[in-house]
Length: 329
Image (tube, rainbow, N blue to C red; front, side, top):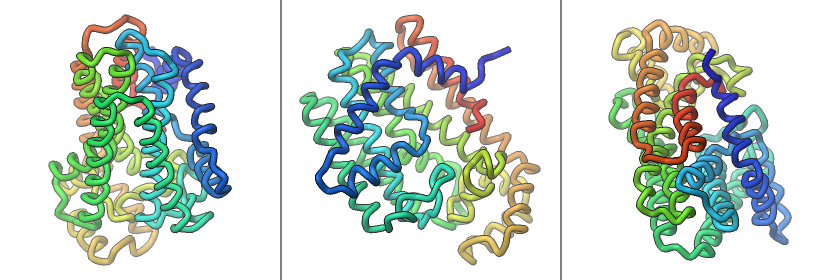
């Protein structure tokens, strides 16, 4: 029986357990501030149950590239996690989100102003860590990544409740908003190991892994239970996000397309019955299935991008990509 994603993830975490523990310590140290609200909110969002996929990927990529001094790799992993966390804080403010990973969002607890400002602190602290590393290639990669991330956020906002959203634009949002930090993690792992010649290949692996991850997340929004998601099913449309499962389903179901246009014009669901109706129609029109098929294609491209690398780390990177499509969380 094939390993589950959870089992592969556990093996990957075990391989770099010491480094991940060092990442956790560095996070605490780097959140230090005499402004009490900063470490309080920072710890709240960082400890809210995320998988730490971006730091994990950086550390695995460093192993795959031949190994890196933890004194270099760990701060880079923390920098990527801080940038990701800052984007979540800002995202929740833009979306007026009340929940994050099944718990009250930071802005729901402390307000929008505090969440935005602590997100700004995390961005600036991340670049402090990157500057301390001293590698211009690292800074260039992360400057590009944060620019693309911001563009992805704005692109998503510009297309909120856009019932004419198409596959190409939805994929571009995924590349910029989600996959770009996976891409950066792969590249920084190679650079931390002193193997700049592997940076582009490991970056491409990260890019397609990030695409696969986001496509699965988008599919789960219509396929998983509210308990598993920590939020209602078909939540994305209610927040104005027209994602790949809905786009695929509307291509096959004209009535669904008409209903989505009405929801978009209204700015949300009329009631929970309408939410359930949309969710059922997306599934029956194979929107979820086609999205998962696209995720499998992205995972395949991730594996194909990998260079010749040591067996253990390489096998884990392959397994992470392949099993990511089967995950349910």
